[in-house]
Amino acid sequence: MKPAEAEGFEPHAPLVQVWAQPMDGRAGRFEEVAEETPVALALNGVSQAVMMATPSDLEDFAFGFALTEGWIDHRHQILDVEIQPQDAGVVIDLATTAACEHRQRARRRTMAGRTGCGLCGVESLQQMAVRGPARATAPSTPGGADPGAMVRASMAFQRHQHLQARCGGLHAAAWCGRDGEVLLVREDVGRHNALDKLIGALLRQGAAPGAGFVLMSSRCSYELVQKASAAGIGALACVSAPTAHAVRTAAACGVSLWGFVREGRASRYA
Image (cartoon, rainbow, N blue to C red; front, side, top):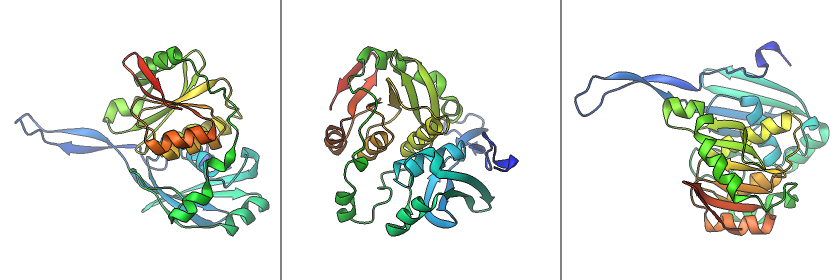
């Protein structure tokens, strides 16, 4: 791996300063806002997806996205990562094993990523049905997470969202221990991206999701459940509500799903 691509390398700043003028007549000032950069992910030189993401922890993002989208099954199938900053955005080229390349070539599709509710990697309803619940992976984490631990994690969560504290425009995903300790956090403009970054960070560290859970700063969508299940995470908690499809998917995947984990309360949906 090239020195410029060492851990922590950021080809673009995750936050930029823009001028803001309050409507109440107070003096204008420069404020930090979250950057939103096109990030193209390629597999052995062939473009696979373009996602709008915050340009931080990009190697984590690449590893996590590759795992949750089914490009790889474990971290050793990624042989190298090349991050290429360009004027229009960032290209991340993953060199994978021949088996992964062949598998992806057989089902290659073009994806357009958004910070909103696009369905990553799916062009039709038929593809969504075929994809099924996250490659039917059995979560390694016991589903019966302690709601008290979730509440404790939610109370400490905000202190770990360092970029969000500066700009107010980012989602976060946290890996929390069984006791509710917040162990690792990743942030992004997109909640799906934040979870991919967190999963990628765990993957790169060789940390198998053991007894713990993921806490998200957002509502819970279908894809968050799929990504958690694909990574072997058995418990997912969100500070806001789940969608009905997320609840159905969690039940099918065996993922323990919690919502409204905030202000000293939590509700289990699956």
